View 1 (tube, rainbow, N blue to C red):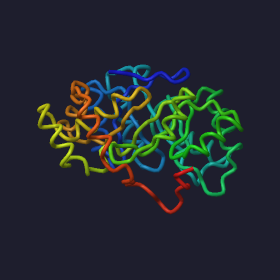
View 2: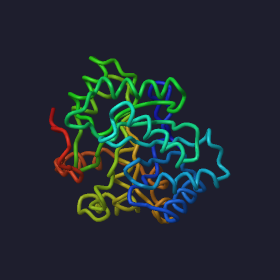
View 3: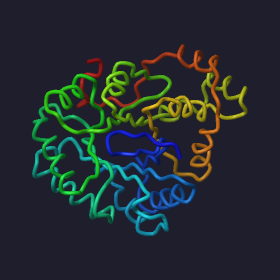
Length: 273
């Protein structure tokens, strides 16, 4: 499994996204992924499935130290006491004494960012999170967290795929040595069939989804966490590493529209800053 190094964190480039997987379905998916060689599992307080992930972690023969586990605190719980309670609840549900990466899931419109980041740092210092980061932070907010507040964050998890460009954010994160975890890397299923991607896929004897994933894997600081409950999907995502894109493929992908955003709730920040 290819990895990204950001600070002290080594992040596998392919992770299992678990949004919308619940209960036994979630546990089965995580166990299957770990059995196929995945070593990066992504969950969140808001997903309501940390218990399902935790059951898989308790049952798998894979050592906990070999698994990168990410979870996230919901934006309504960014006050210090609330974040502490959220972390305690997450660790209990996940049946682990630490997470490898703890993220602020969304910036809250009225949050006290210095206090929230200071709490993340304390959780890291106490060993409850090996690394800390953020999610859904546009460039300006990320810059504030790093340059004004001085938070030792190593990752920003954002929507990123062949139909949504992140050039400004990528450039800044590359400059600062951060990892970008791409959620919705298949644009919530929109890329399973896509004319330009289908043409590239046919040339290589693979699928459009595998082309879309390999486009992300080929970028130095980018990891991807597609949701994959079925064994066939998990294996197909792993097999995407074997795809080789040529210059013509990359040019065709670069020419696609880059303004398709799948996730944009009412509390989302201003993206283009």
